[in-house]
Amino acid sequence: MQATQTRVARTFRKTTETFAAGAKTLAQRYFVSPEIFAREQANIFSKQWVLVGHQSQIAQAGDYFTADVARESLIIVRDKRGEIHGFYNVCRHRGSRLVENRNGHVSAIQCPYHAWTYGLDGPLLGAPHMDDVPGFDKADYPLHPVHLALWEGFIFVNLADSLTPLDKWLAPLTGKFFRWNLPALRSAKRIAYDVQANWKLIFENYSECYHCAGVHPELSKISPSDSAENDLTEGPFLGGFMRIASDKSLTMSSKTCALPVGDFGNEDFRFVFYYSIFPNMLLSLHPDYVMVHQLEAQSPERTLLLCDWFFHPEAFKRSDFDPDDAIKFWDMVNRQDWHVCELSQQGISSRAYKPGPYSARESIPAAWDDYYLRQMS
Ligand code: FES
Ligand SMILES: [Fe+2]
Image (cartoon, rainbow, N blue to C red; front, side, top):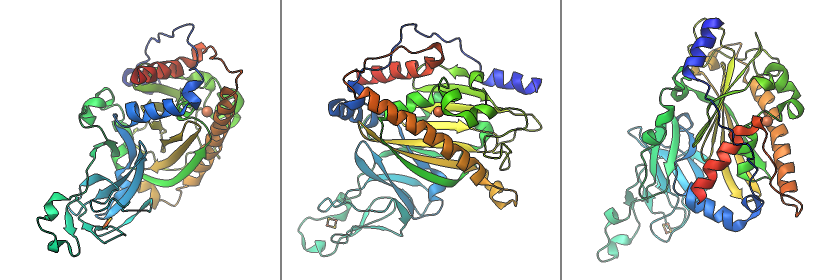
């Protein structure tokens, strides 16, 4: 155990936190104003790398899913050479939405309106009767691409014209999560939560365990709420780790539910790591599974959350594999969190609301707010 703790401490070195005494929650307008929401879409979601999914969701050529980013519908698809592409979900003829389903499998992308057909890598392949149009050349009408890149198996897109490459943007996290085998993992379950709260309340809630003893009694029994230590304390990537009680796992039964996701050797690896990756990813790394929340801000008062539970691919073949044990546990904890986020939204919408003081245990939400405000200015 001592060796493990030393290794964890080395890899995830606790940072001396500079908690600004006097830090307060954001002003009401940041949670209710349509103008602020529109500015977030322009300044943040249209300019930064945004998580849209994991490569395992589109394992075969022709597999696709759609994603909403900055109020744009995008098609994410794997082509016949195995490459993943992102396109605006907009036909080059008269602009029709091309794909309506959230996911599926196609051999080509065909518009439902006049049947223009596009290859999985974007070119226009067929346009009925357009040969009669003088000067028409199919080569002029490929699908509009978006910037797309992978990090640890996760697919990110960026709608900006000029941008920092994804690997450079995520450079502070390089190598940090290699032990969890993230590119190889597969999701056993996705639950979509429609939460009646501003997207920032979800981040702020995720970033502290000040609320855990009261809101999450079951979680606190297995992972003490006062065991949190942070190693990323400023900027777009924030978080740290908490301890898991000996011989326990964060599951309904408190027992491990799957093969370890990574090679932790014979170590007694009793930690859970929680990181927020600005602006829409929450990454929770357990010894036996990895949970990822992907946020889609719908309006100032509404957020869609896609929560996936990832496991080692070998785990699926084992008779003792019991993913529901973890899924049910976090579904319960998630709903406890969404409830207090919705209560926050309701109270913050009141004329009586004024920004309140953060505690020293809320240094990460305060740092998150700070980074957010810098993106908005
Ligand atoms: S709008 Fe797509 S083929 Fe006409
Ligand atoms: Fe919580």
